[in-house]
Amino acid sequence: MISRYLRWQVLGSFMGKLLFAERDGVQVLKLIGDVRVTLGPTISTFLTRLGESKTFKSIIIDLTETQGIDSTSLGLLAKISLTTQETFGTIPTIISPNEDITRILESMGFDKVFVILKELVTECGQLGELNTEIVSESKLRKQVLDAHRVLMSLNERNRGEFQDLVQALEHERVGEPAEQRDRVA
Image 1 (cartoon, rainbow, N blue to C red):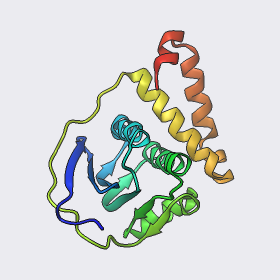
Image 2 (image 1 turned 135 degrees about the horizontal axis):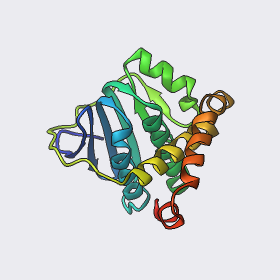
Image 3 (image 1 turned 120 degrees about the vertical axis):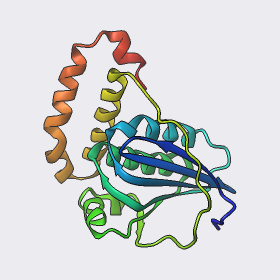
Image 4 (image 1 turned 180 degrees about the vertical axis):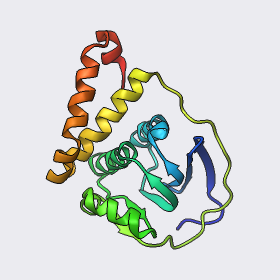
C-alpha cells in the first residue's frame, strides 16, 4: 500500500515537524519531535487541503517519532478525523508505539474516532523539508480555540478539562475587532 516511492513533504517547526506523503489517495501525516501549538497553522493548512482532495482514500497519522504533543495539536488531529469521516466516510489510522502517547490518545477519546495501531506496516521513503506556516496571533488563537472545542466534543472528561481555557480564549476574542474575528478560518 505505502511504499518507498512515496513523495514526502516536510511541514516544519523549531521544536517538532510534520512530514506528509501521498500516493494513490493514501495520505500519511508524520509528526516528529515535540509537536506544539506552533505547528497548529501547518496542521490547519493540511486539514484544509485534505478536505479539498479529489483523490483521497485514507489517511494514516504516524506518531512513531513523536516525543510529545500538546492539546492544541491533539484537537487538530481530532478535527482531521472528524473531517475525513464527514467528507469521505473513512476513519483515519494513528500509528502510536509510545505507550505514554497512546495513553493520552485513549484518555482524550481518540479510540472512538481513530483506529490506533502500535506499528507502521511499511517504510515510507525519503523525506524533504518545507517551511512552517506563520499566522497572526488572532488566527493562532482561533485555531487553539477550535482545537480545544473539538477535544471537548469527544468526551465529558475533555469538556471539564478544557472548559476554562475555551472560556478564557472566547473572552480574549471578544476584545478583537469584528473583522479580525470573522476572517480567521
